[in-house]
Amino acid sequence: MHSPKPNPETDWPSELYRVLKAADVRQMSYVPDAGHSQLIRLFSADADVTTHVLTTEEEGIAIAAGAWLGGQRSVLLMQSSGVGNCINMLSLSAIGRFPLLMLVTMRGEWAEFNPWQVPMSRATQPSLEAIGLKVMRAETAEDLVETVESAASLAYESDQQIAVLIGQRLIGKKKW
Amino acid sequence: MSVPSQLDRRAAVAALLKSRGETLVVSGLGSPTYDLHAAGDRDDNFYLWGAMGGAALIGLGLAQAQPSRRVLALTGDGEQLMGLGGIATIGVARPKNLDIVVIDNQHFGETGMQASHTGRGVDLTAIATACGFAVTGTVRTLEEVQRLAVQMAEPADGPRLFVIKVRAENPPRSLPSRDAVFIKNRFRAHLGFAAA
Image 1 (tube, each protein chain N blue to C red):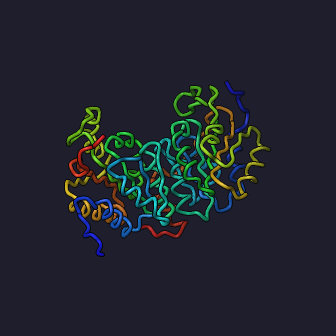
Image 2: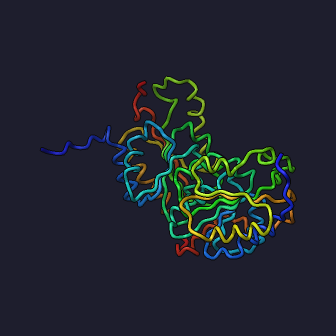
C-alpha cells in the first residue's frame, strides 16, 4: 500500500485548503459553485472553521468584515457572476481597509456553453478594480496555489482587498 | 397598512442600550447609526455609513468570531429589507449570541419618507421565524422596550430578531466619525487586537 502522489492538476482545491489553513483562516463563506465544490467540502468538514452558505455573494463581504472586527480571518468563494452582486458592499472593505480575500472561479470565458455568463465574465475584473480591489489571476494549478498564498499574505498581513480569479480553463469544461 | 407607532426612536434606542453591558453593537447606515451615537459613543460601537444590507451580517461574522460576547445589530427597516437573504443566512448559521433589532418607522426615512414594505404589511419577524430564528417579537411602547432590554440580556438558543415600531420622523442627526479605519481599529483595540 502506498498513498497516491498528489496530482497538482487535479488536487489544487486540497492545496488551496492547506494554504488557507496555514494562513489561519477561521471563517469561510460561499455561494455554491461546482469549481469550488471540493474546497467547500474540505472546509465544511473542518470543525475549526465556521462556514456560511450565502443567499447572495455580497453577504460574504459583510461577514468577512465582521469576522475581522472580532479577530478572525475569513475567505469568500464565488463565481464570477457573483462579483456583480458585490460591488456596493465592497465599499465597506475598501473604505474600512478590511482585509479581504475572494476566490472567484471564472465563467463565460473558456468553453462556456451558456452565453448569459459572458457579459459578467467580461465585467468581472474591471468592476472589481473600479471599486478598489487588487485582482490577481491564475491559469494553472501550480500558479493558483502560489497566487493564493501570496494573496493571503497581502490581504491578512497588509490589510489589502484582493480577488483571485481562477481561469475557467483550470476548472475544465462543465459536464451536464 | 400597519398602525403607525408613536414611540420616539431615540428614547427607544437609549432604553434598549441602557444596560447593554459588554454587548458589541453594529449599526446600519442612516438613522440607526445616529441613534446609536446619540445613545453614547463607545469603542465597542461599529457604525456603518454605507454597505446597505450588511449590518446584520457584519454582526454574524463578529458573533462567530467572538462566541463569548453578545452581539447586537441595530438597523432600520429599509436596510434589513435590502438584506432579507441575510436573515436566511443567519437562520442557517444559528449563532446563539446575535440579536438583530430593527428600528422600524415603516418608511425610507433617509430618502424622502416613502412608505416601506413594513408599512405595507411585510412582517420581518414572520420572515425571521420562517428562517429558524429562536425568538422574535415586536414592541411599540417604551415600557415594552424596557422589558425587551431585560429579555435580551438573557441567554438565547439561537439568533433573535426584534422589531421596535417607532414614529416616522428624522430627529437631528448625531454624527459619529465617518473614518471607517478609525472606527475599525478602535473597535478591535477594545477587543484586544493591536492596530497593525
